[in-house]
Image 1 (cartoon, chains in turn brown, blue):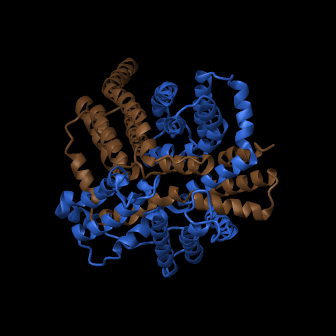
Image 2 (image 1 turned 90 degrees about the vertical axis):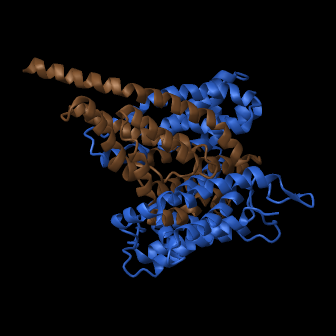
Length: 232
Length: 331
């Protein structure tokens, strides 16, 4: 019966209700099933909220980041990455993966992102590199692949970079949750260090795939050219 | 001894400042509900310090009742969950002004941002060893949080010196702009933390654990690790968020079976377990902001194109995580 709360979460997310409402309702239902009184439920929400405040501390850096953005931080970062324009698509995305991962590991997740970086800078540069190699008229499948890989490099880099930054949600959620529920005292830095091997593996695996991307794209261009000749 | 309480108050003050700005913004589309959300959030960061929680710093005797905070949390979830908050139009620099400024300030722009990780690490690695009269300067286990608070404060000063804004409070306007653009998602991680606690009290972990223990024979390290990692990935795919899966699978398998029964070291177990969940995040449309918004922004024909590219990396990385979980926590 107590699994009903989990079901509500799965169904609520699947039906695209607002996650905050889903989580709140699932919490109240779970608590009622556990036989708690309304006052006990409110107390549980209160202590839980107080105990998990550390997760939200990451937001206190927003004023500084906003200040630097106001003076052109993103534009400067774009200028720096723009100097790598001589690379092939695969190597460019590999470099971006590296920069994104390292920046996120230092807590600088606002450097990068699909809206700020990939659409205006990274994707056009990657596509430009493919055009330099294969001519201006690329098959639609190649353009799609370049777009998908540009977005994926950003997400993989951000995920497996920020997991080693001590002040980001994931690390603080682990220490906050575990300390509150199991009476441990885990230091955030310890969690971040144990996330390092996976971060390195993510770079090696995804980086290796990016290095093979140029060959894959070339084959896609050849294949579609072959199809074009057959049709002609 | 310096603890994390003042860092919570710093964060509370920042949320309050955002709330006050919204309340004074006559052109804000959802002025009063948005202001109420941020003001409540700010106030609860102060109130929370006087509630006797498990990680609270205050003695039980002088503590305040927790239920008003619970009421505030549910109120905030309802305000934001029902779409009653929205970002206001904050005046900031134009793209052209930023280009011109970037050309002038050059790499100086990175200094305030880089101050944050440098100071945070200096606190958690360096100052954590400093003791005065035999008592540690920073509260144990809270070095990183204290460091983050100090870093945010120091970086603001560094930013003011390096970038010389005419109005010193402009950083809080820019902070409000970013905070409002994140919107209700600011509250979600904490509410998921609350839910995890309630799941534990309702015995969800025990139930999933009972199911998991049917799958995990006693003393089988390989099966226990597989169930923990697969459960993290599967729950994450279903919920779109590894943060939601973590409390469930940790209460079910990670803590009782791996740590308590098989004596796995907790830090690597939980760190890598969470990352097994991240592999699920790469594969799920439920994580819309990571996997569906980018293809839309890039005007792709296949809105699942990014997920398809990410699945091979996620699968290989999942295997790596299982291998790491089999070894590192048992060293």
